[in-house]
Length: 172
Length: 172
Image (cartoon, rainbow over all chains, first blue to last red):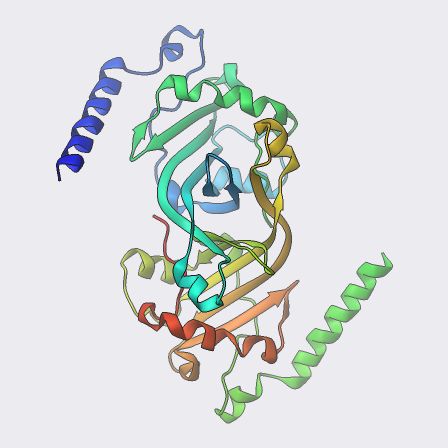
């Protein structure tokens, strides 16, 4: 209970700080990259694009979902993605399923464990012009990551500029 | 081109044979389990339930999608699933992404490769009474698997009877 209370206080403090700080500095002065500060509405209802397992330190099982604009662009193989596209990456810890393995009679099944975080790419070619037209975001329990966490997003996506900075391909 | 033509002929022959044979024998005599013979319409547009990696011989990366009835029941944690529920399991081969690994600077990223098949569980408590109310199906390139392939489906799901024979849990 104490740990939960601590978490609530910490979360509330973070939310309060974010509210005090306001939008990312770049948003106001146009110098550095602005980031997405609000969780896009209804993303858990979006359609599925693909899944991935990131091994190593991340050790995540992720699903990539897209809003209607994203799904349409993917299916029509239309690049660049139009403004209004939002792509969500939901990550869970990658854990063995004892339940499934018991039935299979061998250790082979890995499923989604505890939630890790949710990341977004939001296309707005004017607002996010400094980062290829994409606004980046990461939320954990609804709390946005700090700008320092988001700064490496765009540089990491630059190598896939040929697909409009989007790594994930549509699984038909 | 020849291989594609061969595929078309083979697929057409299989479809024709299935049409000649008609529904699974059990469907008519009520003795053995009937199976689902048509691909449920529009399943690729359904909402995402969860993902899984099956290692070992399967070596698949799968996504589990549900129609509106399935998603509603999952979210309301309502068991048994109501008639009309359809759950789809889409499987791809589990392959490393050279593209992603190059950016990460290490081999860690596994994504969806070639499609393997699509499986369905269709809830109709009367039609599929012999198999817990679930009709099972598997399609590869739209062609249904033979009944011998589907016969082990239900026995394998019996251990999870407490969750109405459904292994996959909703990833929130």
